[in-house]
Image (cartoon, rainbow, N blue to C red; front, side):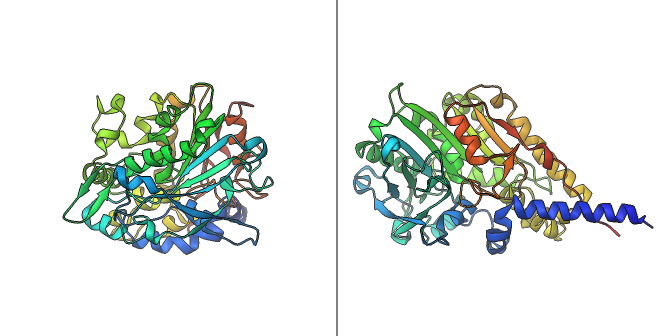
Length: 426
């Protein structure tokens, strides 16, 4: 039997956890419930847009800025095409005032494809064909044009580069039999060339960002982005929910590593990975950010949650590693995790912090690691709002702004949510 005091305390703890997950994990309440079934039913090698796109695609407010799609007309001649051979595209909203010569490039995310079947499926979606992309995209969060929603970057030139290759803008190959073009690297180069011609070459400030698979891409291309500009231009990079770990899943397997091996091999990614990594590690390892970030010379900001919902559901506890459904409850709601499951998840958190130790020692780098159960935190609701995730009374937008403009060193780790509280047991 348990004492009344013990039961009351457990109820209090559980209510606190649920409140935390609702307030700080706003996606869980507003968006996650719509997406979770799809995430659990689809395997990793299916097209899965990140929750960042869900944020950006919302047009809940009447005054949400909708930005038209622009095809990169000169890309086809360079072989820079989507999976189905259509032209790549982006959305651009011009800057004004003090931000007229400042540029923010956001790389869209949306998982990967790792074999002919998954890439063939993907090319029949907006993540593989520009002919299927929305003609307008809502600009919210870090892309918003409203000062009250995006105080640091609202008047910059803001670009969303659409993701239609399936290898984080890094492949360069083709499969003629399946009529598939793996040209992510060429898309990146053609987009940058096009934007430079449209005024980005005059930038005095630039920030490369990306979410999920786009966040990984912002890490992979960070130093290349820096190289586009003269040394007088202030250039930095930020990855949102792109710090994917080479983690062991609950069955002892390597679900995400196996996926990445397929992506790297199929799409010809190896030649575009940093030589400083491939000179001593296998190509798949060099697709994981933990093996790259220590050698990136451009200032880089890592925004991630230590309990990333996508990684927990698809890398740590995928359905393929959980045939008996032991993780079904925990996968949907961390308050339903058993003590042993919480211990496993905390091991993942510790692995992430260990992987960031050397990176965090550099004064030029920044990081904001909290413990919300979400995936992507630069979109509407999470970026800069009254109930946005915050650590030490500093929102994500404020932390990133302090880091980018050199107002303060930002190395934030959310200790207050470090220990998840297990549910009551009978």
